[in-house]
Image (tube, one colour):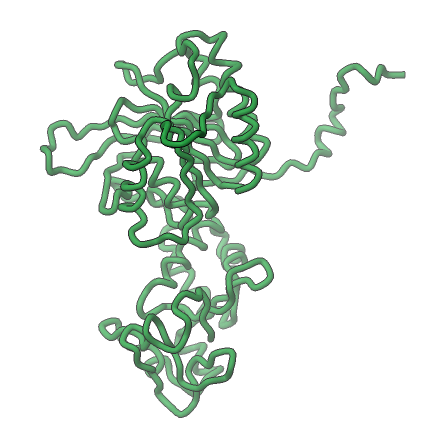
Length: 385
């Protein structure tokens, strides 16, 4: 009879009977879900701007460095920068958007909130915030401001960082910790710091000779347990959004927009993003991000309906001649103006090519296809076929 107080190791049958989900990505190929990542860079190199862009991309469901993201809440814990400067950077990145689930936790002394990684009560509060918001990503900026220990001591750094890794693993949240580099380009302090994380990002600026007016650019190295080593050449674009200096094309995802449109035309029926991704054998987040971009285009290249919630998933259909010839008397050329003519909502007009309604709303009103100045609520992210 076994001792109930002893460790109970798994047999091979028990081990292989475990239901372990396949690993997924918060940012495809770069940032695994439920991972702890150390981002190191020299002072004022741009690691704060990089992680603010990461948070904004995740919160808005926009690609980050041309990679699809898992859309969800994002939390930026600002322990080094003044909250005024952080707010200004976020405003530049988001523009007028105030509806994104992007949260800032000021830890710079402007509020009573404090976070020390060796303070059990403070870590419980951090854990409670994560369980409440269920963010896809949390950024801690920077490590030096979150402890009073000796960074060159492995005996101190290992136990200090263990709770950060546990937080990421047990809540399935991608946690990114910003850290300073040494003069040699490596992570400052003991090797136990990097060893406490699942992967490391190293960012270095290489625009010293570009002149004061040139946008910042640099190299991002990625190494970890979830994928191969990568080196990305990146630059800061408009609106404080980082972008690849050379566009990234994911294997199997080239031309995803054309593939989606061709697929919807071929199937000639409404499909959700999950169905489209499954039939194209494409990454779900890549399909979702591309559909999100298409919904913002004028004219919109797809018709869609649904609120995009669990109980009312958004469904997409083709606006190609094949679809309209079968199901409608209105020709697509009559419904969708050319690219140099905005859809009815932009100018407050209604496009109708016949007496038959083009896109009846839920009340059955005829001939209304509205945008910002039309008859449909512009804030509602839902349209009708």
